[in-house]
Every structure is written in C-alpha cells, then in structure tokens.
Length: 103
Image (cartoon, rainbow, N blue to C red; front, top):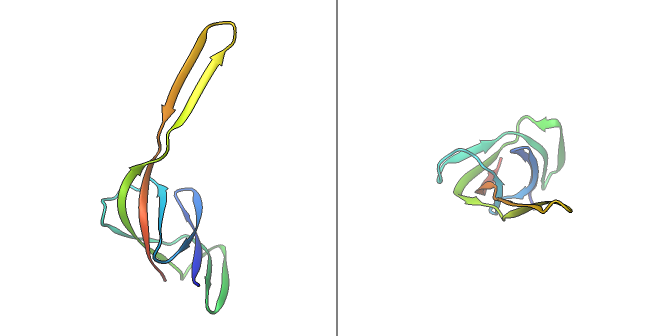
C-alpha cells in the first residue's frame, strides 16, 4: 500500500493513489492535470521517507474533477436583553481532485 502526506492549500492530506479528495479551491479548469511538489511523507514497499520539511524528488500527480461548495456553516450572533439576533451562513468553495499517481 502506497500513500503520501501532502501539503495543499494550507492543509495536510493523507492521500492514496486512485482516490479522490476535496481540497481548498484551486483556480484551474476541470480536467486539468497538476503536480503537487510539497510531499511531506512518502510510504511505499521500500519503507517510509520523511522530508525536512519536504521531499525534493517525490511528487503527486492530480486531476481536477469539478468545483463544488462545502457544507453550510451557520453563524448565529445574539445579544441578550437587546433583541439583536443575526443569522448568517457560509459555504466554502472546494475543488474535488483525483489522485492519479504518486511519483
């Protein structure tokens, strides 16, 4: 089983080849193929390689599937005894990517 831990969009993801994940919004078109070069940890049949902070030779090849919106987050502010209530919602923009290969 081969896996890697990558840094993408300010977050760290444990990824495996052939699966899809939701990253923070990446401004590219669906169908584009990108290379992630910030690989923090790599595991394969030979063992585990840990970067300091990143592995220079290893890269991850991803394909952008589509852009989606995340779950709605409700923000509710209330001031007691003042009859002030404020309800606001927010949905983050996400990008669904397919991990094609861990190089």
